[in-house]
Image (cartoon, rainbow, N blue to C red; front, side, top):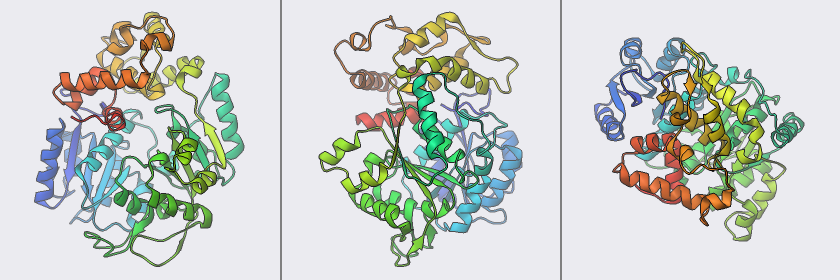
Length: 457
C-alpha cells in the first residue's frame, strides 16, 4: 500500500476526484470507498491548492475538459505544489496534443471514458505503488527521468546484464526482456531508454495483461471519431504519443492474436492505423517488450505468432531472479532505505538478525517482494533500526537455511504462494487492503498475483 504523502492519522491512501459531472463523481466516490480508500471530490480545479493542503491526496483522478480550470491546468499546479503526486486523466476527448502535453508535465496515465472500474482501480494502484518508491524531490517529468543515475551491480549476473544494456542502448534495436515476475524488467527497460539517444523523448510503459483487448488496442493505436460507442472525438495512441522516444509493453505474452498481427505490422513497417481509421501514420518509436513466460513454448503451442517472436527477439536480455544475484541485496537495500529515509529525522538501517533472514529467504517475488517487505518493515519499525520482528510474517516463520526444494515440501513456489494468498483473502473477508498489509506486499502486486492465480475476492 502506498505511504507516499499519506496523512499520519490514516494508513489508507487518499484519492482526490475532480470532475464536473456529479454522477461520475458520486460513482467514483462509492467505488474507491468500497476499496478502502479515503476520498473527496470537487466539481472543478479552482480549489486545487486548498485541497492539496487540507486533504493531502496520494493520487488525483481528474477529467480533462473542465471550466474554468482544465485538467491540464490542474496538472501544472500540482507539479509546482506537489511534484511527485501522481495524476491520472480520464477523458472522452483525448487528442495527441493533450496526451503529449500531459506526459511531458508528468501525468502517469490516461483513461478514456467509458472505462471499466477495474481498469481505473488498477491504474490507481500502479500509480500509488510507483509514487511510494520515489522521494518527494525526485524528478517527475519524462525529460527529468533521463538524468537519473545508473543502475549499480556487484554480482557477475547483474553486471553482465548491464554490459548488454551498454552495447544495445545506443541502437534502435527492438529489445525483448525476459525474466520472472518482480525481477525489475520495467526498470531495465527504462535504463535502456535512459542510456539511449532517445532519452529526452517520452518513455511510455503499458501492461499488456492489465487491459482488455478493445481497450488495449485503442490505447496502443488510438482511434478515430465514431470508431465505437463513446468515441466522440479522435484520439492518438501511445505509439504516436511516444514519438521520438520508447514504448515499453510488459507481459507481451498475453497479447491477443489480433493485436499480435497488428504489432507485427508496426515493427515491420513503422506505421500504424488508428482503430476505425484509414490513414496510415508513420511512427518513430523504439519498442521494448517484456515477458515472464516462455515465448518459445507459446509459439510451439500456437498461442504466440512465430513471426512476431522472431521480430521481437532481435536483442534479448534476461533479468536474473534475485536468488541468482544475492550479492546485490546489500546494495539494493541501501538504495531502498535511502529513498525511504527521505523526509525523516533518521536514516533506516537493517539489523544483523533481520539481514540474515533476508539473505535466507528465497524471494519468489524477487526484487519487488523485497521492496514491499522493506516498505512494510519501515512502517512498523519503532525506530531507525529494522529488526527481525519488523519483517513480514512469511520471512520470519519457517525461514530456516534449507534448499528451495525442501522448503517447498514437494510443492512448487507458485502453489505455496497461491495458497498463502487464498488463505489471507479468506481470513480478511476479501478486504484487499488488509490482505496486502498482512502479506507485506503492495496492493498492485496482490492484484497481479490474484489475476495470475485466478483468485477472486
